[in-house]
Every structure is written in structure tokens, then in C-alpha cells.
Image (cartoon, rainbow, N blue to C red):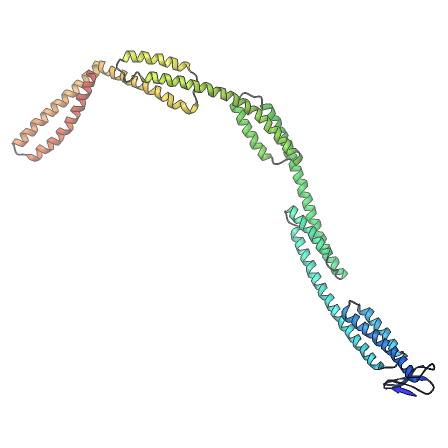
Length: 409
């Protein structure tokens, strides 16, 4: 008979394992010594230890599910309970009990983790829904559309919630996307209608511009082209495939008109510059008549110059006032000479001038006599008053005498 702390072999070869409940037969051994028998059944025990070690390691270090881990524990527990092995089976049972506790702890941790993930996913999806509902009323069609597509991708990457919650949030999310799509379609449909209307209006403007391109009524036609340009800007943009073609046709018609006008105006400007040269020569010739010494000869010469002046066409607008001012200055000088001559030859004017001069001379002589008497009488105040009056009358007399000399020529 042979034994160790956990088992024994009796004289019949029966092998026993010791447990808290007493001995239990685990097998029999007839092929060798009792020590070999115990060693054989102890190796079977070590095999169970290895299996439990492996399961513990899987539970601690892998993502083995709680369900599979529990099934593995139960399988090992059954093996331990029915084990044909010699060793501390109670210790193995305790390890399996500890594994059950560990699995339950892991299950709770995973349950809590799933709950946290679910709550995070809920918050994330609620945030996506809120943003989608804000974007649903946006008019930033391109940016909002791209952002909504990105939100869909983000949604797909989030874990599902419970069916009811997930369906409710998805319904709101999908409704926001649909509302935005409907508004965008309506906007672009209206925009297409506006662009079509713009195309029709611009076609009419192009037609009118082409009809005007051959006009030689320069002023009104140029003004009408300016109006057409304002109408073009107010018409808005046509479809992209039409806008550039319409513009090119519109500009081409204008270019034809303005090129023709520029050519005509260039010829006119050259002619007016030549006319300006001729009038400058005539103005210089007229200015040589000044100062007027022979009124009759000056009048005849100016008349002849003026006839040649009138035969010359228009000059450039910016030189017109200057060149005409030179001729007008000569004309005014001749007119002033004529007026002076008329005053000299008019007997009534001379008579009025001589009469006024005589009256002023008498007044001056009278004042001088009065001043002399006042000084002789010692009346200084009166003498000073009369002298002031004399100064005024003398000034009038001097002016009258000057006018009379001018009449005398």
C-alpha cells in the first residue's frame, strides 16, 4: 500500500483521492507499483491545473466573452468534480470559483463599458441630429451639403443604440437631410428659371445691339448702348453654357459700332485740329489791329478777317472758348473805339459835358472865395468845412475836365 497527502493506493490496486467529504475512488492500477499509480493520477491532476491556468490567462488577457468563459468554467468544473486524478481538487474548485467571480466582474465591466459606449453614442447621435437640423435651414448649399454627407459617414461609424432610440434619432436625422435636399432642389429650380429668363432677356439685348451696330447716329446710338449695358447687368446671369457666348456676341456688336464711330471721330478731330491752326492764324492777324489808330481801316480789316473766320469749320471743343475769346477781345476793342468816336462827334454830349464843367468850375471858384473870407474873419472852423467841400467839388471838376479832353480826342 502507498499514499501521499492527496491520495493512496490500497493492496488491491484501487486508487483513492482525498477530499473534504472523504475519500473517492478515481481508478485502479494493476500494471506497476503503487508509486507509479499515484504518479499517473497526479499527472492527470497537473493536466487539469494547466487547463485552468490557460483559462485564467484567456479570461484576463483576451476578449473572451463572458458566456464562453462561463461555459469553459462549467466544463472544467465538471471535469474537476468527476476527475480521475489525485491532487488538491478543492483548490482547483476554489480557483474555478474565483474565475467565476472574475468573469462576473469582467461581465459587469463590459456591461458598464457598453452602457458608457451606448450613452456616448446616444450623445454623439443627438449632436449629429442637432447639427443636421441646423443645416436643414442653411442657404450655404455646397458647404451644408458636404457637411451633411460627412455626418452620414460619422453616423455609420457609431454603434447602434436600442432599436427604439436608434430609430427615433435616425428618423429626425433623415428628416433633416430630406428637408435640406428639398429646399436645395427648390432653390436651384428657381435659379434655373431665373437664368433661363436672363438668357431670354439677353438674347433680345444681343439682337438689338446687333441691329444698332451699323448706325451712324453716333450720339443717340452710343447712349442706347449705355442703356443696353445697364439692362444687361440688371438681367442677371444666364446658364453657364450660354453666358459667355451671349456676352461675346453682345460685345462684338458694340465693338463694330464704336470702332466705326472712332474712325469717323478721328477724321473729324484731325479736321478740327487743322481748323484750329487756321483760326489761330486769323486771331493773330486780328490782334495786330490793336491798338486802334485808324478806326475805319481797323473796322474794314476786321470784317474781312471775320468773313474768313466764319468760313473755317469747327475746332476741338476744349479749344473753342480760348480761340473765340481772342477774336471777341479784338471786336470789343474796335467797338469801344467806335463808341469813343461817337461820343467825340456828338454835339449834345459835348454840350452837356461843357455845361457840367462850367457849373463845377463856378462852384469851385465860389467856394474858394468863401474860404478866403472865412479866414479873414478868423472863422477857422467854417474855413475847414468849406475846404472839405471844395475837395469834393474839385474831384468832380477834374473828372469832368478829363471827359471833355477825351471828347476833344
